[in-house]
Amino acid sequence: MSEAHSMQLDTLITNASLHNRKGRWCIGINHRQFSYVGQTFTGGANYTIDANGKLLLPGLLEPHAHLDKTYTWQDGDAALPPTTSALRQAIVRMQAVKASRTPESITVALRRALNRAISFGVSGIRSHIDIGEERDLHTVRQLLAVRDEYRDLIKIEYTALGSCDTLQQEKLLRLALSCGVDHVGGAPALSADPRKALAALFALAEQVNKPLDLHIDETENPTSPCLEALAELVVEHQFKQRVMASHCCSLAFTDTFTRSRILTKVKVAGIHLVSLPACNLVLMGRRDLQPKPRGALPVDELLRANIPVSVGTDNVGDFFQPWGDYDPLRSAALCAEVAQIDEPERVFTLASSAVASAFGIDDYGIAVGNRADCSLLDAASLREALSESPLRTHVFFAGKLILQQQLQQQWS
Image (cartoon, rainbow, N blue to C red):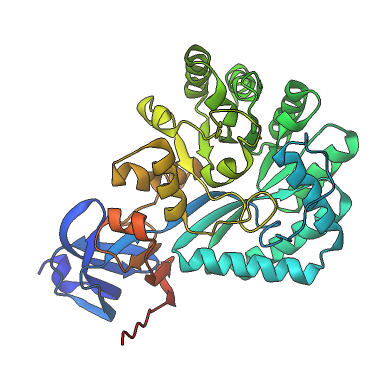
């Protein structure tokens, strides 16, 4: 008797479409894992879902969010000089809001954001947390508590977004990391001496043996030095932990020769780049220049050079990005439009397997033995899913069905 005939499953999904295979498929889930992937199954199952041709995708992954800031947008302009960059204006306005936020409002916004992400089939999310003053440590503890609350629904990682520019700031970073924050982060290009700021963050990551996840060169300045300097530090120190660099907007403003030189060093260093097109389109290119520069990472060029790259959502509903939502397919589709990428599979990779690789997830994807994170979409193809952001009718996390949704329409 074949295994397909004798197997008893927890859950069986029949007649599903898969993004990288033709035909209809049966997907079996047992003990938190995919235990069967084939086109015919005659064993038993405790629970069966007829997908009726709907698309089954592996759990989506969000490599860059700011859950501590989410849904804080307030109308009204800050009294700032018009010469202040949009990024620095957002920082100042966010600081004012942080001073008046209550712990309860932070938790409510965080749960709302996580619920949205889960509803889109997100199984893993990484968020940066501002670390610049004592009260930020209270926010860290709140976010860690909510992470524990949601541990059976979504995997959450945190990055400490701070600096070592002063001894007090470094102390706060170390305290956040000791509380359970996973990665060393920062935005060295915003410091008075970017190279010195980068070197200090790098040294801290070496000392505490944590991965680096940095905001890099979020500027229109083509001479911003941080990405190239980061690659040189990684190679020189033979840094063994994973390194991610987000934004890297300055690459969009460099000449071809300079960009090629920098990207060659990035590839040798094995740095994973993250494109954040929504936020960069909002914040970059606000100067009175023609044609208007946009500052988006050249993802098409990175893909051609086989440089690891993924796409993230970044901020949602705050001063950095008043729009947006927690759907990685939406971010991937926007990236495809900006970078003029036409292949759906390549676009989908930016929000799925590329992120899994950056996160070090070895059991990702719909294959026997892998962890059963997946969602069933009301779409028949990957191109349709990327174009329409369809309803996720069923969402699974670690083999457990955690959410069912349906859309009712009545035409008259």
